[in-house]
Amino acid sequence: AVVSTQSAGGFLRTTISSLKWTPETLPIPQIFIFMSGWTLFYYFSRILLSQSCSAEYCCRIVTLVHGFLISTLCGLLHLYITPAAPWNSFSQPNSHLTNFILLLSLGYFLFDLVWCCFIGSEEISMLVHHIVSLFGLFYATFYNHYGLEVTAVLFGAEITNPMLQFRWFLREHGKYHSTVGVINDYLFCFSFAFWRFGIGTVYAYKAVVSDESTMVCKGGAISMYLISGVFMFHVGRFFLRKYVWKMKKPSKQE
Image (cartoon, rainbow, N blue to C red; front, side, top):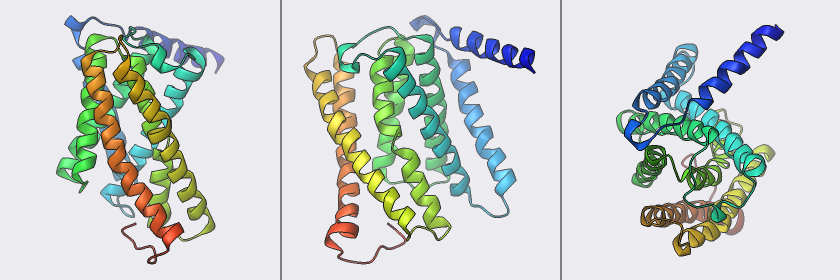
């Protein structure tokens, strides 16, 4: 068992350490592998849960796993491996771990965009969010730079995603209108406001005024901030209606 654990750890370290390339060698095969991995995960979920769960249920399982995994890896990267504030390190070359995170999210967002277009019923704002996210991930992957900026944005965006998915699962199982549902709503809304509009405002400003940030990075920061503003409007309106104004009872759509 010890030997197999060491072998698995060595394989993982070798795999991550190989994730280094030049702009002339964009890792198309790796991107395809990661996208295929998320797609297979979705189809395995469909096979295991096909009798009791919908396609959206299985897709949200994938989304939940991605949000938890990416926020954990990005938190590890920024809090322990490169603990300096991300706005002090623009345009730095990517590390092996950074490239691994970028590929992991690239594969997921490609899968989810295809799912949303052909199966789901997401709003335009979510589709735009996915497209802008994919552009940033491709840009950082292609140039083998700017990974710290992109992973910092990923952390702020994905750290609240598990709470959003948990809310959907609570509603799906008839447990939403409970103390757990209220606590989850409060945690989600305030965390969303803190990361997207609190830290997000500081980061967007630093990216725009920094001399080290490229015009593409500045445009990406502004785009993501505007998208976050649209999401923040909907989150704030939901919170005010349900917990402040009490204008109406929560409906299934909420």
